[in-house]
Amino acid sequence: MILETNGYGILNNKFNIQHENIIDVVNNERWSKSEIVRFTIKFDGEAMKSNEIDADELATSLLGLSAVLEESNTIINGSYSQMIVKVRGSFNPGSFEVDIATFFTSNGINAVVNILQLLGFISGGSYSLIWFFRRTKGEKIRNKKQVQGNNYEVTVNNSDSPLIINGDVLSLYEDAPMRESLRKVIYPLNNKGISDITFSKNDEVHEKILREEREYFTLLDKESINEKEDVDYFLITQANFDGKQTGWRLSFGESAATTKNKNDFPVKILDDDFLYKVKVKKIIISSEDTIIKAKYKKTTQKLERLSVNWDILKILKIDHTPEKHTETLKKFIGVL
Image (cartoon, rainbow, N blue to C red; front, side, top):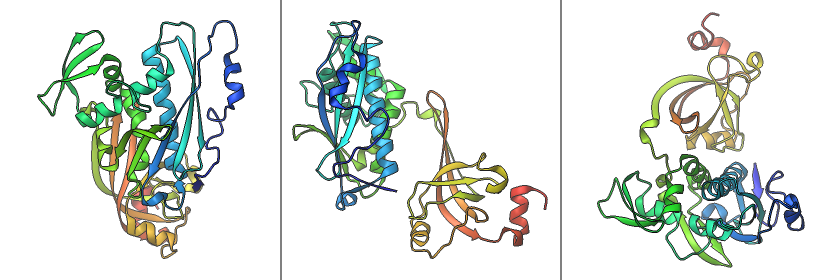
């Protein structure tokens, strides 16, 4: 599925709030009003020349962006404010405008402008969270000590040179859900056709994340990641006939008809030759009887909960008539 990026609304739930209704959402005496602040997120690269972006990549990024804003608001302001986020397409290729409004129960908390400056989405007078990720390459904090006010001197695993950073930025950097949400924001950079993501306000670019920097935005605790590579047989229960990496689902050993897809799971297929042949119909896929033998990577991550990601690295064999492949079927269902 491809989503046009010229001037269309993107999501239908929390991003579908009209300007004139934002202030009325929490219009009662408990809440005080806040100004609406806008910034722009833009995707650039060869893939954007046609003014299109993959819908799965875009949705993942924008949902991650919303989560980053809400998580940062919670970390900085606690339960004293509510943040409302709206995203809309602009008339510039690959560019999306983000409108933010917060409603406060107290005057003594950080305004939305301050939060956006801390994140690096708009310009500010201090080093931002995005800058800190790029400067430290996402490494774990080794030592930290408060030096003046809310500033900290920190060192990270890959450097002995200390850095002075705002304490709020440090809190955001060490927050695991924040880091996971940022990974989703930059998810489109996994597409070779996307070269960078920029954040700007009034056409002034404040931060840019390059494709080669995407690995900086990973989990802090690398010991919680378990990776396994192996070869096995899979049944295709859902295919992406456009030859995209995402949109595929596989299962171990049971037909889609008997399981009703209860035991299947999403995968990303990284075999470009296979994907091209699917796209041009040189390989015919059926969700009822196509079995593949593939080299895969299974990544288990523990953040707030356990999550498992599957990457299909190489398709080694394709079977379209499983009843003729006794050994393969034994591997799937045990007994014929």
